[in-house]
Image (cartoon, rainbow, N blue to C red; front, side):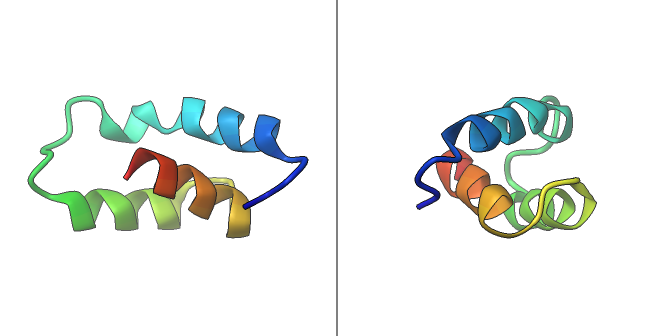
Length: 54
């Protein structure tokens, strides 16, 4: 989706385990919303990272 920005998306994905490790995997919507609202990255970078993790 973000041609030429793979490194930025990778960095975003590498920072997301802080929100995921130890979290209840049955609360997928809550995890998604927490990451979407609390993370530094916005727009296409964050959405690409979330799609990859999802």
